[in-house]
Every structure is written in structure tokens, then in C-alpha cells.
Amino acid sequence: MSSPIKRIGLLTGGGDCPGLNAVIRAVTKSAIHRYKLEVIGVEDGFLGLIQNRMHPLGWNDVSNILTLGGTILGTSNRANPQRYPVKVNGQDEFADVTDRVIEHVAANRLDALVCIGGDGTMSGAANLIEHGINCIGVPKTIDNDLVGCEQTFGFDTAVTTAAECLDKIHSTAKSHHRVMVVEVMGRNAGWVALHAGMATGCDIILLPEIDYDLNKICELLTYRSRTGKRFSIVCISEGAKPAGGELSVCRRDEVSPDPIRLGGIANKLAADIETRTGLETRATILGHIQRGGTPTPFDRVLATRFGFHALELLLDGAFGKLVVWNKGGIDHVDIQQVAGKQRKVPVDDPLISAARAVGTGFGDIAA
Image (cartoon, rainbow, N blue to C red):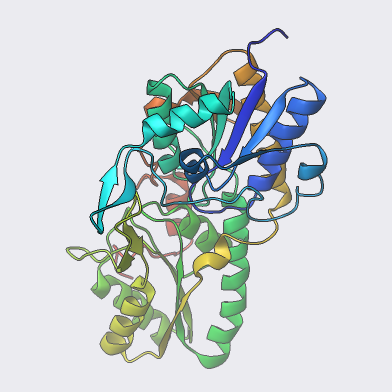
């Protein structure tokens, strides 16, 4: 295969995610072994491009990392070249440092970049594409919310972790006859909550896509209690909110491209349930545990396939593409078509219909 691509940069952006190292391994080993290319690791995502922090990746550098969580390159979810925080007269301001990134790409003789990340990373890649940088995207997010991609790597591991935690909470709920409200990640998309909640037989699943009615929830929980069900488990996505209410924001990070940090809705809902029903209720927030640990075999395989396909796209000259999983196979779409967008759970999704059929509540229909 003849290609002008001889030296590629590789970066991981956004939040960490199980399977990142599997992609790094696949891209680097395929580049070295099959195509005799040089691979340069960019440190800490776009921050490494801004600050010119990069280093060569060799065969041994990426050996024995397939099963490791996190990313050996480091990452950052606060580095946006189009809105980079700088100090001006002691005050925080934001500047577009895209030109600096372009200079560093040229100085390191990078013919192309493989950008591994979610919607924020793809927005950054889209900006570089507009400035003439050859980029290929690889979809990473535990939230599974990238438009055009039916499943991202990291999602299966996050669901598995959440399901394991829900299984453990099940025994505590049963022993103490409590309502247990468990908050999972997902931002504005409810895929993690839907899959983990279904997999563990949760009695109520609350999604960002379906605003919940506290009265309906309490009616269902009270009905269960009166008919001999002495405990209940509610799986709630961090982006869920009551009808007519607001998102639960635990903090704001104004430096970040996505300043809102969701969290705490489980605590609010647990207090509301206990006050309204008198049922003893406890909240658990799983938090970053869902991002960590060894990726599942499925995610390792998917990440490896994504990494290899990304490299093939580069060498075929198919720049500006995002590798995706669609209809049971590997495909690709234009990065600029998906940048900045989110794939949410349709309210008529077959999984929701199946869950409703077995009696699962979604906070919108009374018992």
C-alpha cells in the first residue's frame, strides 16, 4: 500500500475509559508491524498538542497494555485549542490557540492524527480538519452517546461494572427492606442506566430522556411494599430530572469545554421518596468506578478492531472519518457530521418496551 502517511500522532482525549490502551496498542503495533510507520504519542490529549509534549511509541511501549484500564498517554477534558485558558493581567481569559497546535504538528512532522475520544474530542478534531490537519477519529465513551455509532468501546465495561454494583446492592436492599437509589453515569444519555438497570432487574429505571414524576414513582414503590415486595431498587442516570425540574449539578468547571458536572440526583430522589412514602431509602452514587478497571473482552476486541480500521482509513487517504460500529460491523462516518452531537435513548427504544413489559417503571406511568 503506497501512502504519503509515514509518521502519525496518537492522542486520547476527554475522560478516561476502559479500552483506550487497547486502541493505542492496535494502532501502534499495526503501524509498526504491517506498515513500517513511525508513531508519536501525544501526552494528555489536546493539551499535549498545545504544549508540544509528545514522544515516540515503540513496540515495547505498547506491549502488555491490552488489559490495562486508563491510558498510558494520559488525557485531559479541559484542553480545547479553540478555548484555552490563559492569564491576561492576572485574569483568566480564553484564547484560540489552534495556530499553536498546527505549528507543533508541523514541527513534529506528523502527517496525520488519530484522535481517540468522545463528542468533545471529535469537535476538536473537526476544528483541526478545517485547518488542514489529517485526522481520523476513534469513538470512546462509556456513555455510548456518539451519533452514528451504535456502540463505543468502554460502554460494555461500564455497564458490567454498574451491574456488578447493583447486584451487590440488591442483597443489602433485601436484607434491610429498603428502597435503594443507585446513580450511574451517562451525562445526557441514559444508555448505561438502561442496560445496567435491565441486566439487574431494577424495579425503576430513570433516564434523562424521560422526565420522571415523583408521584408515579412513589405510587409504584408503595404498591410494591403493600403487595409483599419489601424492597425496591431504582437505577437513575446522573442526567435524569423531575418533570418541570432542573438537572442536579454537583459543580461547575468554567475552564472545561463542558463546564457542567452532573451528580447528586440520587441523593435528592432518595430524600424525596422517604419523605413522601415513609419507606426507608438510601442513595449510592457509583461515580468514577464506572470508568476504571480492566476492560471486558468485548471492549478489548472492539477497541482493537477500531484501532486497526482507523489506521487503514488513514493509509487509504480517507481523512476526516470516525470509525464506528453499525449493524454488527465496522464502518465509518464523517467526523464533522457527528462533532458536538449526542446520541440519546429514543423513548420508543425496543429495550424500554421490553423493560416495561416485565413491569419495570420509568417514572412516568403509575402502578
